Length: 149
Length: 149
Image (cartoon, rainbow over all chains, first blue to last red; front, side, top):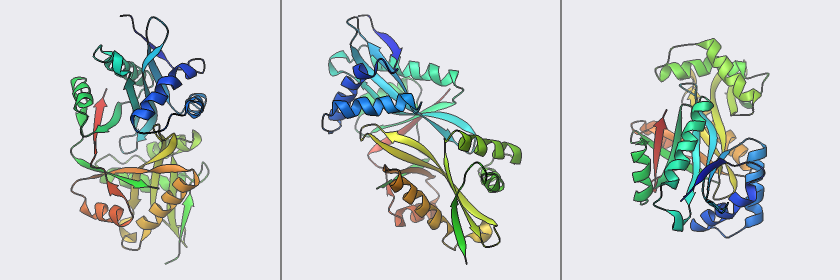
């Protein structure tokens, strides 16, 4: 199977939006293709996120990842906050997630980012295994708090 | 005590540099005023962070907070990471931190953000109590991971 990893840009938005919409539905959201297109388009045009997607030989997107630039102030560190990683169910087990994460890592090095932060469901052991095999370390020194508005 | 909470901009951000420098030293970094000033100014110039500071009637800086804008892709909404919160020792116990958090929350609402994420050391029970009394909830359904390059 030939899989290409490509950087998302204004031309590939609708292709990515299709699986982005599926990804959101996986997390219980309603399908809303138009809003997905707008959301991704806004992020790309304002350079507020970086997207990589995996494409099969038919030119369809089978997985994607989106990272948001962020900082850690104390060490003056530029980081990436990995918001999303998704691979179509039918395409899992072929290393697509790993390739997408490697693309983010390469990009991070180019922009002088010092690392990648992400979070995952406590019960998503599959994802945890993937992250740990790539060298991600679980943060056990801190508590994370969220204020829901 | 009369106290104002002000959102920093490119003109006023230098006022926060001294506090930011002390805050970083508290976390074990070397003092470096120039680098602090440059880091903060660069974030303001690029709209990469939002800073609020507290000052008294003599315009002494009492504390500050810095937030980084990000997104919750699944919700198609903005999100904020509160990375820094610092109150000068002489100004503690007067509700400065709470006022800074209120300003952060107002900003989050104004920008239609989903919420505010922050992290704190497990041993910092005082900070945890403050956050909890403010409505922050500890994230227990997600693990956080980091990969340094």
